[in-house]
Structures are given as C-alpha cells and as structure tokens.
Image: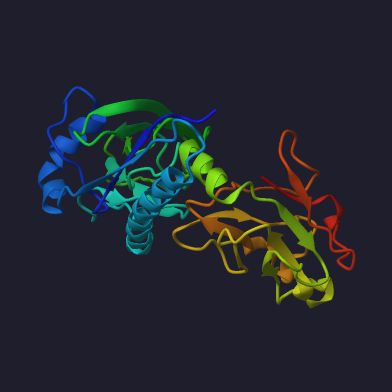
Length: 335
C-alpha cells in the first residue's frame, strides 16, 4: 500500500531551528537557552513533499525521488561536517555539540551537555550512548527529543546511565523531518566525570520513497559471487587486503541495478548508511573488524548482517568463501 504523502524537513545548517519554542519541555527549554546560537547559524529549511496516491505514475515517482535526493544530499553534507567537527564534551566546551551520524562522539560529563543532530531524512533514528569510564558515581539523566521546525518537541523519551547500567540504545520511529536533540545531565561535579560516547544514526528512506523507487526501477535483488563479478549486474568488489589467505580478492556483491553500493575495509563511509561485515571467528590480524558495506541514504535496500544464519522474514544472501577457513558458511547479508 502506498502512502499518500510525506513531508521531510532538513535544515541547511548543522544546528538550526526556526520559530519560538515551548519552554515546558526540557529540550525546547534548551533551545530557548541557545536560541541566539541557533539563529546565528540561519534557519534555512527545505521541505520535501511526495504524493504517490495511485502507485502507477512513474513521472510522479521520479519527481519524488529527485526531490528526496536533493534533501538527502543537503543532509549528508551537513552530517559530514558534523562528523568532522573536532572536540567532544568537556568543561571547556560551550553550547550544543554536533551529534553527526554513525560515528561515536566522546565526552567527559561533569554537569550538562546538549547534542544536536541533523533533521532526519528517514522514518527512523537510532540513539546510542555508552558510559566508558570515569570516577563519577552519580546517575546521568538523558532526554531524547525530536523537534519540529518551530522548536516544539513532537516526541520525547527519557533514560538513565550509571556505572551499573552503562548503556542506552533505542531506535525511534515516525521521526521523518524532525530534529534530534539529546540532553545529558548529572549533579555538578568539578572533580569527577562520566566518560562516555554517543552516536545518532538515521535509518532507511521513508517508505514512500522506497515505494517510488519500486515504481521507477523495480525491486532490487542482490547476489554474492566468490569468483568475479556477475554479468548484467552492478557489482562491488569485497576485499580485505590483510586476509590474502582468505582469497577475498575475487569476491563480489552484485545488485540487479546500480544502487550506489560501496565497500570499505577501513570503517564506515561518511554520509552513507553502512553495515558492518564481520566474522568473529576471524583472527584480529585478518582485519575484519572494520569492514563495511555502505549504500547511499536514499538507497532502496536496508542491509543487516548475520554471522549465524539467515534472518527470519528477510531476503538473505549467503557470503560463503569456501577457501576461507573461518566459518563463513553461515554468514549472510539480509535486506
């Protein structure tokens, strides 16, 4: 079933909001506190609308994809800048910090900190925080908010992190176009801190965009081959130079059409949706700990990796390299 319409809002600055905010919510209260900072960065907001009412109009579907591509490119540019921003959370930093995407930002919390992401060009957004050390014994109170273009909190959730419960990981739904904000606070302590890392990651494109991609290009199928690229398909080479004995140099993941699939043997690629490809049985020396399959943020597939068999309810492709002795026979990329 096709959704009739969706609106996605993306800021043209990493930390940008427009309009007045309600002070009753802690996130919007923080917005009021830093409103001059936000305004100084400019409140340039682009809106994307998509209507696929009949589900059979290729021209309308292509228009939808073209507009969404512009939005996601703008968001990706902002995310790259946020990811490259140096410095974390310390008693020397002032104002909100850019959250970036799919990278861990580090901090040493001694009082309060605000982290701000880029408006979500997706239906979902994952927030992760992990306490990594420090001498502070108090509990960190966290608030996750998703703000609209007026600065009002449309969705809010709370969590706590402390030495006995050191992590938070939640995926939020129905947040397309909203601005993610994470507030962290603890009793002020000038001598002890919670060391931590934090990350935010958008998910797949909105369903209406996926629907448009199906209308224009048809469904995407993936195939793995351990002996070179497959004719008539868009193939991406999967190689780990640190593992020559595994004979991965001629292994390819191929798509029925070009979806912008890319391989990285040195960590996730900025501005893309990346899925780690790892086999825990591999020795560290073979370098499989930092390998990723990446697709553009508007790609019509969302990849999940499993090193213990196919994932139920999904289409899964076996990543079997018989020459590699480290149990690759039960490894799958699913979508």
